[in-house]
Image (cartoon, rainbow, N blue to C red):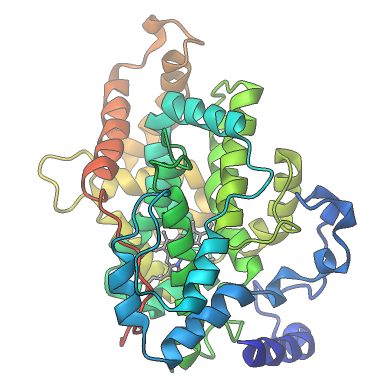
Amino acid sequence: MEELSRRNLLRASGAAAAVGTVGMAAPTWAWSPAGSLAGANAGTAAQTDPKHVWDDEADTVVRALFERGEVARVNDLLKKWVKNSDPLPAGLPADLVAFLEKARKLPSWADEKKLADAVTFNTKRGLYLGVLYGFVSGMVSTVIPQEALAVYYSKGGYNLKDRISKTAKFGYDIGSLNAYKPGGEMIVTAVKTRLAHAGVRYLLPQSHTWTGRAPEDVPISQADLLVTWHSLPTLVMRMLNDWKVPIPAKESEGFLHSWQVSGYMLGLREEYIPKSWAAAEAQAKIVFDPILRPTPEGLKLADALLDLGKQIDGTLLTRGVLEALTRYMLGEQIASWLKLTRQPLWDTLLKVAWRPFVAVREGILPLPFMPAMAWAFDEILRQFVLLYMSEFRKIQIQIPVVNNPA
Ligand code: HEM
Protein backbone atom coordinates (compact mmCIF):
# COMPACT_ATOMS: atom_id res chain seq x y z
CA MET A 1 0.00 0.00 0.00
CA GLU A 2 2.86 2.39 0.85
CA GLU A 3 4.18 1.86 -2.66
CA LEU A 4 0.81 2.59 -4.24
CA SER A 5 0.17 5.52 -1.93
CA ARG A 6 3.42 7.17 -2.89
CA ARG A 7 2.70 6.60 -6.54
CA ASN A 8 -0.71 8.12 -6.13
CA LEU A 9 0.73 11.13 -4.33
CA LEU A 10 3.14 11.83 -7.15
CA ARG A 11 0.47 11.30 -9.76
CA ALA A 12 -2.01 13.48 -7.90
CA SER A 13 0.35 16.39 -7.38
CA GLY A 14 1.39 16.42 -11.03
CA ALA A 15 -1.86 15.62 -12.70
CA ALA A 16 -4.57 17.24 -10.61
CA ALA A 17 -4.65 20.48 -12.51
CA ALA A 18 -4.22 18.85 -15.89
CA VAL A 19 -6.92 16.25 -15.50
CA GLY A 20 -9.49 18.66 -14.14
CA THR A 21 -11.65 15.77 -13.04
CA VAL A 22 -14.37 16.57 -10.52
CA GLY A 23 -13.41 15.09 -7.18
CA MET A 24 -9.76 15.72 -7.77
CA ALA A 25 -10.18 19.50 -7.69
CA ALA A 26 -7.83 21.53 -5.49
CA PRO A 27 -4.64 19.78 -4.40
CA THR A 28 -4.58 21.80 -1.20
CA TRP A 29 -6.73 21.04 1.84
CA ALA A 30 -8.73 24.13 2.62
CA TRP A 31 -10.45 22.97 5.81
CA SER A 32 -8.93 24.23 9.05
CA PRO A 33 -7.83 21.48 11.47
CA ALA A 34 -9.05 23.81 14.22
CA GLY A 35 -12.50 22.46 13.35
CA SER A 36 -11.45 18.86 13.92
CA LEU A 37 -11.62 16.64 16.97
CA ALA A 38 -7.84 16.70 17.13
CA GLY A 39 -7.99 20.50 17.16
CA ALA A 40 -5.61 23.15 15.95
CA ASN A 41 -2.60 21.52 17.60
CA ALA A 42 -2.83 18.40 15.52
CA GLY A 43 0.44 19.31 13.81
CA THR A 44 1.30 19.06 10.17
CA ALA A 45 -0.59 15.77 9.75
CA ALA A 46 -3.80 17.75 9.98
CA GLN A 47 -2.81 19.85 7.00
CA THR A 48 -2.22 16.83 4.78
CA ASP A 49 -4.90 16.63 2.14
CA PRO A 50 -7.04 13.59 3.06
CA LYS A 51 -7.11 12.62 -0.62
CA HIS A 52 -3.55 11.41 -0.06
CA VAL A 53 -4.14 9.49 3.15
CA TRP A 54 -5.64 6.01 3.43
CA ASP A 55 -5.61 3.60 6.39
CA ASP A 56 -2.09 2.22 6.66
CA GLU A 57 -2.70 0.07 9.74
CA ALA A 58 -5.66 -1.82 8.28
CA ASP A 59 -4.18 -1.90 4.78
CA THR A 60 -0.91 -3.45 5.95
CA VAL A 61 -2.64 -6.26 7.83
CA VAL A 62 -5.17 -7.01 5.08
CA ARG A 63 -2.54 -6.97 2.35
CA ALA A 64 -0.56 -9.53 4.38
CA LEU A 65 -3.69 -11.70 4.69
CA PHE A 66 -4.12 -11.67 0.91
CA GLU A 67 -0.44 -12.42 0.34
CA ARG A 68 -0.57 -15.36 2.73
CA GLY A 69 -3.82 -16.64 1.17
CA GLU A 70 -5.67 -16.36 4.49
CA VAL A 71 -8.64 -14.14 3.65
CA ALA A 72 -11.27 -16.87 3.20
CA ARG A 73 -10.21 -18.63 6.42
CA VAL A 74 -10.22 -15.34 8.35
CA ASN A 75 -13.66 -14.39 6.98
CA ASP A 76 -14.95 -17.72 8.16
CA LEU A 77 -13.50 -17.36 11.65
CA LEU A 78 -14.73 -13.78 11.99
CA LYS A 79 -18.35 -14.92 11.52
CA LYS A 80 -18.18 -15.96 15.16
CA TRP A 81 -17.25 -12.44 16.26
CA VAL A 82 -20.62 -10.73 16.68
CA LYS A 83 -21.06 -8.82 19.95
CA ASN A 84 -18.82 -5.97 21.04
CA SER A 85 -17.78 -7.89 24.14
CA ASP A 86 -17.10 -11.21 22.35
CA PRO A 87 -13.50 -12.40 22.58
CA LEU A 88 -11.80 -12.68 19.20
CA PRO A 89 -12.26 -16.17 17.72
CA ALA A 90 -9.34 -18.54 18.25
CA GLY A 91 -7.10 -19.28 15.29
CA LEU A 92 -6.79 -15.77 13.81
CA PRO A 93 -3.29 -14.78 12.63
CA ALA A 94 -1.28 -12.83 15.22
CA ASP A 95 -0.91 -9.62 13.16
CA LEU A 96 -4.68 -9.49 12.64
CA VAL A 97 -5.33 -10.10 16.34
CA ALA A 98 -2.98 -7.22 17.25
CA PHE A 99 -4.79 -4.95 14.80
CA LEU A 100 -8.29 -5.96 15.93
CA GLU A 101 -7.52 -5.62 19.64
CA LYS A 102 -6.40 -2.05 19.01
CA ALA A 103 -9.11 -1.20 16.49
CA ARG A 104 -11.96 -2.41 18.73
CA LYS A 105 -11.11 0.08 21.48
CA LEU A 106 -13.43 3.07 21.63
CA PRO A 107 -11.65 6.44 21.53
CA SER A 108 -10.88 8.03 24.91
CA TRP A 109 -13.29 10.85 24.08
CA ALA A 110 -16.30 8.54 23.51
CA ASP A 111 -18.94 9.85 25.88
CA GLU A 112 -21.60 7.49 27.18
CA LYS A 113 -24.03 10.29 27.98
CA LYS A 114 -23.81 11.70 24.49
CA LEU A 115 -24.25 8.24 23.01
CA ALA A 116 -27.36 7.88 25.15
CA ASP A 117 -28.62 11.19 23.73
CA ALA A 118 -28.07 9.74 20.27
CA VAL A 119 -30.34 6.84 21.20
CA THR A 120 -33.03 9.32 22.27
CA PHE A 121 -32.61 11.11 18.96
CA ASN A 122 -32.90 7.86 17.03
CA THR A 123 -35.91 6.68 18.98
CA LYS A 124 -37.76 9.95 18.44
CA ARG A 125 -36.70 10.38 14.80
CA GLY A 126 -36.55 6.70 13.80
CA LEU A 127 -39.44 7.03 11.39
CA TYR A 128 -37.67 9.74 9.37
CA LEU A 129 -34.30 7.98 9.65
CA GLY A 130 -35.64 4.94 7.80
CA VAL A 131 -36.23 6.95 4.64
CA LEU A 132 -33.20 9.21 5.15
CA TYR A 133 -30.56 6.53 5.70
CA GLY A 134 -32.42 3.86 3.81
CA PHE A 135 -33.08 5.81 0.71
CA VAL A 136 -31.98 9.45 0.54
CA SER A 137 -28.35 8.78 1.55
CA GLY A 138 -28.32 5.80 -0.78
CA MET A 139 -29.55 7.90 -3.71
CA VAL A 140 -26.91 10.52 -2.97
CA SER A 141 -24.21 7.87 -2.98
CA THR A 142 -25.08 7.23 -6.63
CA VAL A 143 -23.87 10.76 -7.47
CA ILE A 144 -20.68 10.44 -5.44
CA PRO A 145 -18.38 9.43 -8.28
CA GLN A 146 -15.64 7.70 -6.28
CA GLU A 147 -18.08 5.69 -4.22
CA ALA A 148 -20.24 4.73 -7.19
CA LEU A 149 -17.17 3.55 -9.09
CA ALA A 150 -15.71 1.62 -6.14
CA VAL A 151 -19.02 -0.03 -5.33
CA TYR A 152 -19.82 -0.87 -8.93
CA TYR A 153 -16.47 -2.47 -9.77
CA SER A 154 -16.00 -4.26 -6.44
CA LYS A 155 -17.66 -7.52 -5.51
CA GLY A 156 -20.70 -5.66 -4.18
CA GLY A 157 -21.41 -4.58 -7.74
CA TYR A 158 -23.04 -7.97 -8.26
CA ASN A 159 -25.95 -6.88 -6.16
CA LEU A 160 -26.18 -3.12 -6.07
CA LYS A 161 -29.35 -2.81 -4.06
CA ASP A 162 -28.00 -5.08 -1.35
CA ARG A 163 -24.72 -3.17 -1.21
CA ILE A 164 -26.31 0.25 -0.78
CA SER A 165 -28.77 -1.12 1.72
CA LYS A 166 -25.95 -2.34 3.93
CA THR A 167 -24.44 1.13 4.23
CA ALA A 168 -27.89 2.41 5.12
CA LYS A 169 -28.30 -0.31 7.72
CA PHE A 170 -24.96 0.73 9.20
CA GLY A 171 -26.33 4.23 9.68
CA TYR A 172 -29.58 3.06 11.14
CA ASP A 173 -27.88 0.77 13.67
CA ILE A 174 -25.50 3.44 14.94
CA GLY A 175 -28.25 4.93 17.06
CA SER A 176 -29.65 1.66 18.32
CA LEU A 177 -30.05 1.17 22.04
CA ASN A 178 -26.84 -0.62 22.90
CA ALA A 179 -24.83 0.10 19.75
CA TYR A 180 -21.49 0.65 21.45
CA LYS A 181 -22.22 -1.14 24.71
CA PRO A 182 -20.83 -4.62 25.47
CA GLY A 183 -24.00 -6.38 24.30
CA GLY A 184 -24.22 -4.32 21.11
CA GLU A 185 -22.67 -5.00 17.71
CA MET A 186 -21.57 -1.64 16.34
CA ILE A 187 -17.88 -1.97 17.27
CA VAL A 188 -17.70 -5.28 15.45
CA THR A 189 -19.63 -3.94 12.46
CA ALA A 190 -17.41 -0.86 12.17
CA VAL A 191 -14.14 -2.77 12.52
CA LYS A 192 -15.27 -5.42 10.02
CA THR A 193 -16.22 -2.62 7.64
CA ARG A 194 -12.75 -1.15 8.11
CA LEU A 195 -11.31 -4.53 7.08
CA ALA A 196 -13.70 -4.76 4.11
CA HIS A 197 -12.56 -1.32 2.95
CA ALA A 198 -8.91 -2.39 3.25
CA GLY A 199 -9.82 -5.42 1.12
CA VAL A 200 -11.31 -3.13 -1.50
CA ARG A 201 -8.13 -1.02 -1.46
CA TYR A 202 -6.10 -4.15 -2.12
CA LEU A 203 -8.36 -5.62 -4.82
CA LEU A 204 -9.71 -2.72 -6.86
CA PRO A 205 -6.33 -1.46 -8.14
CA GLN A 206 -6.00 -4.92 -9.73
CA SER A 207 -9.27 -4.51 -11.63
CA HIS A 208 -8.84 -3.59 -15.29
CA THR A 209 -12.30 -2.12 -15.37
CA TRP A 210 -11.81 0.16 -12.34
CA THR A 211 -8.32 1.51 -12.97
CA GLY A 212 -8.26 4.56 -15.15
CA ARG A 213 -11.92 5.35 -14.57
CA ALA A 214 -11.43 6.66 -11.04
CA PRO A 215 -9.40 9.80 -10.40
CA GLU A 216 -7.33 7.93 -7.79
CA ASP A 217 -5.07 4.89 -7.93
CA VAL A 218 -6.20 3.52 -4.58
CA PRO A 219 -9.86 3.82 -3.53
CA ILE A 220 -11.43 4.85 -0.20
CA SER A 221 -9.02 7.58 0.87
CA GLN A 222 -9.72 9.56 4.02
CA ALA A 223 -11.31 12.21 1.77
CA ASP A 224 -13.61 9.56 0.27
CA LEU A 225 -14.56 8.39 3.75
CA LEU A 226 -15.38 11.97 4.71
CA VAL A 227 -17.58 12.41 1.64
CA THR A 228 -19.62 9.32 2.49
CA TRP A 229 -19.70 10.36 6.15
CA HIS A 230 -21.32 13.65 5.08
CA SER A 231 -23.81 11.77 2.92
CA LEU A 232 -25.05 10.23 6.15
CA PRO A 233 -25.22 12.46 9.30
CA THR A 234 -24.68 15.84 7.62
CA LEU A 235 -27.29 15.17 4.97
CA VAL A 236 -29.73 13.74 7.53
CA MET A 237 -29.33 16.84 9.70
CA ARG A 238 -29.72 19.15 6.71
CA MET A 239 -32.97 17.42 5.76
CA LEU A 240 -34.44 17.46 9.26
CA ASN A 241 -33.55 21.15 9.64
CA ASP A 242 -35.04 21.87 6.25
CA TRP A 243 -38.27 20.16 7.25
CA LYS A 244 -38.22 22.21 10.48
CA VAL A 245 -38.19 19.16 12.72
CA PRO A 246 -37.44 20.54 16.18
CA ILE A 247 -34.36 18.84 17.63
CA PRO A 248 -33.15 19.67 21.16
CA ALA A 249 -29.46 20.72 21.20
CA LYS A 250 -28.49 17.74 23.36
CA GLU A 251 -29.96 15.27 20.90
CA SER A 252 -28.41 16.93 17.90
CA GLU A 253 -25.02 16.85 19.65
CA GLY A 254 -25.52 13.24 20.66
CA PHE A 255 -26.34 12.30 17.09
CA LEU A 256 -23.17 14.00 15.86
CA HIS A 257 -21.16 12.32 18.59
CA SER A 258 -22.40 8.86 17.60
CA TRP A 259 -21.15 9.55 14.09
CA GLN A 260 -17.82 10.95 15.30
CA VAL A 261 -17.28 7.69 17.18
CA SER A 262 -18.36 5.65 14.15
CA GLY A 263 -16.05 7.60 11.85
CA TYR A 264 -13.17 6.92 14.21
CA MET A 265 -14.02 3.21 14.41
CA LEU A 266 -14.08 3.10 10.59
CA GLY A 267 -10.50 4.37 10.53
CA LEU A 268 -11.10 8.08 10.00
CA ARG A 269 -8.36 10.14 11.61
CA GLU A 270 -9.24 12.53 14.41
CA GLU A 271 -7.68 15.44 12.53
CA TYR A 272 -10.32 15.05 9.83
CA ILE A 273 -13.40 14.37 11.95
CA PRO A 274 -15.46 17.57 12.45
CA LYS A 275 -15.79 18.58 16.09
CA SER A 276 -19.15 20.38 15.74
CA TRP A 277 -22.03 20.75 13.33
CA ALA A 278 -20.66 24.12 12.23
CA ALA A 279 -17.31 22.49 11.44
CA ALA A 280 -19.10 19.63 9.68
CA GLU A 281 -21.04 22.06 7.50
CA ALA A 282 -17.86 23.99 6.67
CA GLN A 283 -16.13 20.75 5.73
CA ALA A 284 -19.09 19.45 3.70
CA LYS A 285 -18.97 22.60 1.58
CA ILE A 286 -15.39 21.69 0.64
CA VAL A 287 -15.38 17.91 0.36
CA PHE A 288 -19.00 16.94 -0.31
CA ASP A 289 -21.16 19.48 -2.17
CA PRO A 290 -18.72 20.31 -4.99
CA ILE A 291 -17.85 16.74 -5.93
CA LEU A 292 -21.35 15.40 -6.60
CA ARG A 293 -21.95 14.49 -10.22
CA PRO A 294 -23.43 11.63 -12.24
CA THR A 295 -21.47 8.70 -13.68
CA PRO A 296 -22.68 5.78 -15.84
CA GLU A 297 -21.96 3.47 -12.90
CA GLY A 298 -23.90 5.72 -10.50
CA LEU A 299 -26.86 5.70 -12.88
CA LYS A 300 -26.96 1.90 -12.77
CA LEU A 301 -26.79 2.00 -8.98
CA ALA A 302 -29.65 4.51 -8.87
CA ASP A 303 -31.68 2.37 -11.23
CA ALA A 304 -31.29 -0.62 -8.91
CA LEU A 305 -32.18 1.42 -5.83
CA LEU A 306 -35.33 2.78 -7.41
CA ASP A 307 -36.52 -0.81 -7.78
CA LEU A 308 -36.19 -1.29 -4.03
CA GLY A 309 -39.86 -2.17 -3.60
CA LYS A 310 -40.17 -4.40 -6.67
CA GLN A 311 -40.35 -7.68 -4.77
CA ILE A 312 -42.71 -6.43 -2.08
CA ASP A 313 -46.39 -7.12 -2.69
CA GLY A 314 -48.73 -4.18 -2.30
CA THR A 315 -45.98 -1.77 -1.26
CA LEU A 316 -46.28 1.98 -1.58
CA LEU A 317 -42.55 2.09 -2.33
CA THR A 318 -43.03 1.87 -6.07
CA ARG A 319 -40.52 3.26 -8.53
CA GLY A 320 -42.73 6.28 -9.20
CA VAL A 321 -43.00 7.16 -5.52
CA LEU A 322 -39.26 6.71 -5.03
CA GLU A 323 -38.52 8.94 -8.03
CA ALA A 324 -40.79 11.63 -6.62
CA LEU A 325 -39.20 11.33 -3.16
CA THR A 326 -35.73 11.72 -4.68
CA ARG A 327 -36.76 14.79 -6.66
CA TYR A 328 -38.43 16.38 -3.65
CA MET A 329 -35.71 15.60 -1.12
CA LEU A 330 -32.57 15.98 -3.22
CA GLY A 331 -33.73 18.62 -5.69
CA GLU A 332 -33.98 19.15 -9.43
CA GLN A 333 -30.26 19.03 -10.18
CA ILE A 334 -29.78 15.49 -8.85
CA ALA A 335 -33.16 14.41 -10.29
CA SER A 336 -32.04 15.50 -13.75
CA TRP A 337 -28.59 13.89 -13.38
CA LEU A 338 -30.36 10.63 -12.54
CA LYS A 339 -32.79 11.11 -15.47
CA LEU A 340 -35.79 10.66 -13.18
CA THR A 341 -39.25 10.71 -14.69
CA ARG A 342 -41.69 13.38 -13.47
CA GLN A 343 -44.51 11.97 -11.34
CA PRO A 344 -47.24 14.64 -11.54
CA LEU A 345 -49.39 13.28 -8.71
CA TRP A 346 -46.62 12.49 -6.20
CA ASP A 347 -44.45 15.48 -7.13
CA THR A 348 -47.36 17.80 -6.38
CA LEU A 349 -48.44 15.94 -3.28
CA LEU A 350 -44.97 16.12 -1.77
CA LYS A 351 -44.59 19.79 -2.63
CA VAL A 352 -47.92 20.74 -1.12
CA ALA A 353 -48.30 18.36 1.79
CA TRP A 354 -44.92 17.10 3.06
CA ARG A 355 -44.08 20.07 5.30
CA PRO A 356 -47.59 20.39 6.80
CA PHE A 357 -47.47 16.63 7.41
CA VAL A 358 -44.16 16.96 9.30
CA ALA A 359 -45.46 20.00 11.20
CA VAL A 360 -48.54 18.08 12.37
CA ARG A 361 -46.47 15.02 13.31
CA GLU A 362 -44.16 17.27 15.32
CA GLY A 363 -47.04 18.97 17.10
CA ILE A 364 -46.23 22.34 15.51
CA LEU A 365 -49.56 22.45 13.67
CA PRO A 366 -52.78 21.01 15.10
CA LEU A 367 -54.32 17.89 13.57
CA PRO A 368 -56.94 19.65 11.42
CA PHE A 369 -54.07 20.95 9.29
CA MET A 370 -53.06 17.40 8.35
CA PRO A 371 -53.45 17.17 4.55
CA ALA A 372 -55.98 14.53 3.51
CA MET A 373 -53.44 12.45 1.60
CA ALA A 374 -50.82 12.61 4.35
CA TRP A 375 -51.74 9.15 5.63
CA ALA A 376 -49.79 7.95 2.61
CA PHE A 377 -46.62 9.66 3.87
CA ASP A 378 -47.00 7.97 7.23
CA GLU A 379 -47.36 4.65 5.47
CA ILE A 380 -44.33 5.29 3.26
CA LEU A 381 -42.16 6.12 6.27
CA ARG A 382 -43.41 3.05 8.10
CA GLN A 383 -42.67 0.81 5.13
CA PHE A 384 -39.08 2.06 4.94
CA VAL A 385 -38.57 1.25 8.61
CA LEU A 386 -40.12 -2.19 8.15
CA LEU A 387 -37.87 -2.83 5.18
CA TYR A 388 -34.80 -2.16 7.26
CA MET A 389 -36.06 -4.15 10.18
CA SER A 390 -36.76 -7.20 8.05
CA GLU A 391 -35.00 -7.58 4.74
CA PHE A 392 -31.65 -6.15 5.79
CA ARG A 393 -31.62 -7.50 9.29
CA LYS A 394 -28.68 -9.86 8.99
CA ILE A 395 -25.61 -8.02 7.95
CA GLN A 396 -22.60 -10.28 7.49
CA ILE A 397 -19.64 -8.07 6.64
CA GLN A 398 -16.65 -9.80 5.09
CA ILE A 399 -13.39 -8.89 3.41
CA PRO A 400 -14.22 -9.15 -0.30
CA VAL A 401 -12.14 -11.76 -2.13
CA VAL A 402 -12.88 -10.79 -5.73
CA ASN A 403 -13.84 -7.74 -7.76
CA ASN A 404 -16.98 -7.47 -9.87
CA PRO A 405 -16.02 -9.41 -13.01
CA ALA A 406 -18.37 -7.24 -15.11
C1 HEM B 1 -18.25 -2.06 2.16
C2 HEM B 1 -20.18 1.28 5.12
C3 HEM B 1 -17.38 4.59 2.99
C4 HEM B 1 -16.93 1.58 -0.76
C5 HEM B 1 -18.94 -1.46 3.18
C6 HEM B 1 -19.77 -2.14 4.14
C7 HEM B 1 -20.34 -1.20 4.94
C8 HEM B 1 -19.86 0.08 4.52
C9 HEM B 1 -21.31 -1.45 6.10
C10 HEM B 1 -19.94 -3.64 4.20
C11 HEM B 1 -21.06 -4.02 3.31
C12 HEM B 1 -20.94 -5.38 2.72
O1 HEM B 1 -20.37 -6.27 3.33
O2 HEM B 1 -21.43 -5.52 1.60
C13 HEM B 1 -19.52 2.47 4.85
C14 HEM B 1 -19.61 3.67 5.64
C15 HEM B 1 -18.80 4.60 5.06
C16 HEM B 1 -18.23 3.98 3.88
C17 HEM B 1 -20.49 3.83 6.88
C18 HEM B 1 -18.47 6.02 5.46
C19 HEM B 1 -18.90 6.65 6.51
C20 HEM B 1 -17.07 4.09 1.75
C21 HEM B 1 -16.42 4.81 0.69
C22 HEM B 1 -16.32 3.96 -0.37
C23 HEM B 1 -16.87 2.70 0.03
C24 HEM B 1 -15.97 6.25 0.79
C25 HEM B 1 -15.73 4.20 -1.74
C26 HEM B 1 -15.21 5.31 -2.17
C27 HEM B 1 -17.19 0.31 -0.27
C28 HEM B 1 -17.01 -0.91 -1.02
C29 HEM B 1 -17.36 -1.96 -0.17
C30 HEM B 1 -17.77 -1.36 1.08
C31 HEM B 1 -16.52 -0.98 -2.45
C32 HEM B 1 -17.27 -3.45 -0.43
C33 HEM B 1 -18.44 -3.99 -1.10
C34 HEM B 1 -18.11 -5.38 -1.60
O3 HEM B 1 -17.58 -5.45 -2.68
O4 HEM B 1 -18.36 -6.35 -0.89
N1 HEM B 1 -19.01 -0.11 3.46
N2 HEM B 1 -18.69 2.70 3.79
N3 HEM B 1 -17.32 2.81 1.32
N4 HEM B 1 -17.65 0.00 0.99
FE1 HEM B 1 -18.09 1.32 2.43
